[in-house]
Length: 282
Image 1: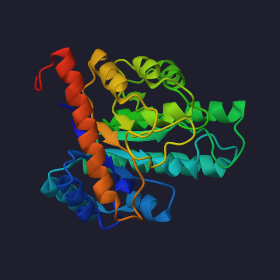
Image 2 (image 1 turned 180 degrees about the horizontal axis):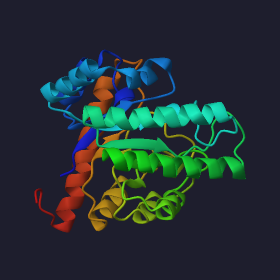
Image 3 (image 1 turned 180 degrees about the vertical axis):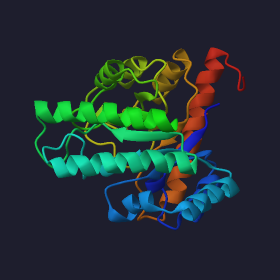
Image 4 (image 1 turned 45 degrees about the vertical axis):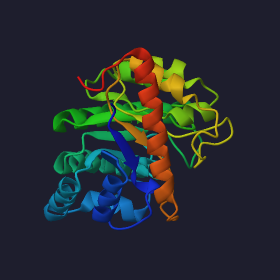
């Protein structure tokens, strides 16, 4: 059975050790840390050795693995920016993020597929993004960290586009980290798209979605074909973590919702495993 993870922002905001404990109590195996564009979360990259060790101990004590970090801070400091200062800051932050993952035991650094966010996307910005990603892959190789490109709302909007970059750059640490819900809102078929990532999928973000939104829908009320996705994962011989990405950090009612999601996903997985005659353990 898959190891299920929960995104930091799906949990009501509290100190990180409490978030890890809360994830464990809700039944999750993994945790995804947010390195978003806020000063608060980017400042984590400046933690000293004792702070990093303390975070590692908190994760170990909770029993939850911090498998991945979502580095959406590059929306504010994009690798494809026309502003040289922003590009330099972006790569400095990437260097720090890779080191942070290496120091804290995080395996996967998730890189959003935005070339830019607050400025126009152009052929030049897309080239700068590609060049920045290639440099990031070298940094990650040196530290033994895996990079996962997440298809998003602009530029890298599909698994197909992400895999084009993966093959072009050709780094052993550069792969994809798709989001099934993002694919639905992009007007794509998640099953067809995920199939293109065979052998290169470091994890999967999942939640419900419809063609208009993928933000905090009650699970089972959208149009995402969960059974089809799990059948696809089985066909791909996929064994990496499945991660629930939601946004309830300002809503204490999220505790009930993340448990609902986990129950729904595990039930769906079991039904697919049963129909395929799959064993629960290797």
